[in-house]
Structure formats: structure tokens, C-alpha cells
Length: 417
Ligand SMILES: Nc1nc2c(ncn2[C@@H]2O[C@H](COP(=O)(O)OP(=O)(O)OP(=O)(O)O)[C@@H](O)[C@H]2O)c(=O)[nH]1
Image (cartoon, rainbow, N blue to C red; front, side):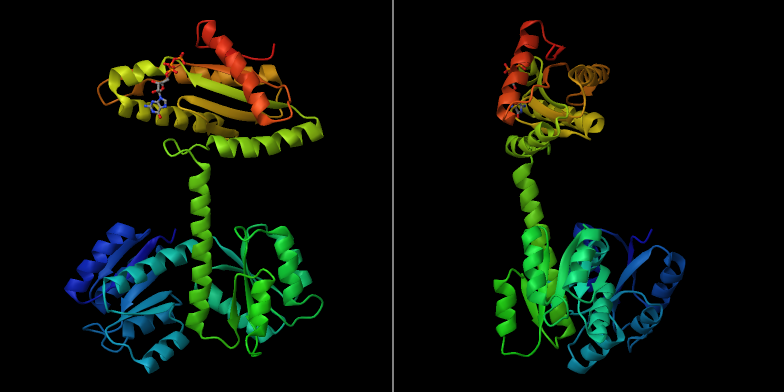
């Protein structure tokens, strides 16, 4: 597996800063060197595990970028660190195929270089579709994207693009030209936006020299950004990266909004929204649909005896157990020590057995409360397969069974029968 990064820098002060930042934020394992000889040794030894390099342009035994040349000849992704900005040098390096060029100005520069490696590593999982009828331009864009490690797919017009989107549901970004046969760029943007929200798909339009009118039209039709052709390679990368990072940020915010802060299980709002969809599907297809309500027994005594913090830990352990055994279903923490699960496709008695099985699994676990005290956990549960019109009504029914279980002595599962 390629999960190591070669970092080569001769200044001991800068190397120290790089080590510090790498420790804080590099998502791969760094290997450090301060001369070309050392770096080449490391490279030969770890070739199969090395993913990319952050390489100082001038080293004591390689004053003219020989280390960078060596790695580029090996087709190895290189981010260059350099002490001074020279436009000609920058242009030559970009043409040679370096991933990026970072001038050593401040801590921010080193952080940028480390983040770029993290970015490349994540890009390996991101699919991008390039839609362009000019073969020359298409290949140019594909090459640029591949240098930044994206998975790239191609189409020559809008129709082919729609077909590719259907075949590859993980595509996250479409870069599209305007002028194409069959279906042009605007028609494509409109067709994509009919199916994909902005949070699910980035669209970048490519426009020729037209005084900016095409760019405006692209944005008004639902594109997120545009690039005027011909573009600078670095502008291309900046726009692609910014858009991908905004999408990731949007997903992080969405995750935070959907999850319970303590246990990271889904929260009540998400559960009700998704549960309603699943319930409607089950009603439409006339299939089984179970809603399970679980409440830990005598949980107050855990807080009272060991403190609220220990209670929090126990809730986290319980949630992990739920996930490990029943993670294939929709699970949520809907209140303090109350949890809900939706189990589609099984009869009521089968779901009661499933939850009983989980209860036995839990009973066999000794839970470490605070490294000194150990407890066992029990819960009561209600399971209903009655398909009401809303998830809230099903939840009330499961809750009713749950409280019957509590009244009948706790530590039991009650179903419709
Ligand atoms: N540590 C911790 N405790 C919580 C949290 N949310 C709710 N609780 C506690 O959960 C306990 C629930 O108590 P009760 O409703 O009396 O229920 P119980 O003790 O589990 O008893 P039964 O449900 O009747 O078996 C209360 O002490 C709450 O403070 C939380 O997020 N963290």
C-alpha cells in the first residue's frame, strides 16, 4: 500500500517545522531526508510504499533540482519547495509535471504543502467526468486531473455524459465544455441539475473567449464554477480543489446535523426523516417493516453511582455494541438512554428474536465504567410491525410495548403478539 511520503529538506530549522506540521496533520507516514543521497536511499528502499514527495529544490548534493528531476523521471508525484520565486523556473517545473510549487515563505507554506499531500491522497477516491468534444483539450484536462490523482472518466457530448453518470453513481464532479454536438453544455447542466442537488455533484463549465457571457449562463443554469479557455494550469487546480473542498465541507456539516454528538449514531430528526421514507416504501411494496424502541434499564443508577461522565462512556459503549451487531439497519439515539432501530423485511417475531439475541450478547459483556468498576447492561424493548401512516405513530406504538416491558419487570422484549 502506498501510504508514505518522502520529505526532503536540508535546512534543519525548516525540517523541524515540517516534522511538527506532519505530526499534527499529515494523514500518511512521513520519511525525512536532508540530502539527495539520503533521499535516494529511502526512495529505493520504500519505492512500493511511497505515495508522493515534498522536495526542496536545492540540496547540498543536488543544487540544481537534481532530486526533483530524478523523481519526475520515475513518474513520482512531487511537490517542490523552493527558497525563491522565479517565474521562469516555476513555468519550467510545472511543464515538467510537478504537482505543485511552494515558495518557502512562512509556516503557512509548509502547511499548504502537507495539506496538498493529504488532498492528493483523498483525490484517489474521487471520480471526475470530463465532457469535451475536442480530443486535444479533453486529454489535456484528463492529464491534469490524473496528475492530482483523481479517477477520471470521459465523454464527448452531453448524451454520453448522462450515460456515464448513470453507469458511475459515484461521480462527484463534472467538467463540461459548452459547444458540443448532440447535447451542449447548458443542456447537460440542466439535465444534471434535474437529478442531482448541488450537495451531490459539482459542475464546472468551460467557456471560450466570449466576454464572459457563457460563464454567466453556466452559473445561471446551475453550474458551480467556470474556467475560461485557455486557462493557467494552477488556476485549474485552484478551482477544482476549492470546489471539492466546499463539497466535503458541506458533507461534514450535513453529517454533524444528522448525528448525535455523544454517540455518533443518527439523531431523532434524521431517523424520522429517513424512517418515513422507508415506511412509505414498505407500505407501497407491501413488505414487512419493524420499528424497535430500546430503553436502558435503571440507567439513572449508573449516573448516580459513577457520575455523569461515566454514564456518557457507558452510552458510547452501548452504541458501539448496537452498531457492531445491528449496524446494517438504521439506528438512532432518539433521547437520553432511548434508541430506535428500523428493521425492514422481517416478521415481528423474527425481529423480537433478533433483539432478544442482542440483549443476550450485551448481558454477556462486562463493561468497564472507569477502569475500576465494572457493570453489566440490560434493556427493555418494544417492537411493532404495524405500518401506521407516519413514523411517529409507529414510534408511539413501539414505545407503548416498551413501557409494558418496563412495568412487567424490565429486561425483556415485547412485540405485537
Ligand atoms: N450520562 C448521561 N446520562 C443521561 C443522558 N441522557 C439522559 N441521561 C440519564 O438517564 C437517566 C434516565 O433515568 P430514568 O428515566 O429514571 O430511567 P432509568 O433509570 O433508566 O430507569 P428505567 O428506564 O425505568 O429502567 C437519568 O438519570 C438521565 O440523567 C446523557 O446524555 N448522559
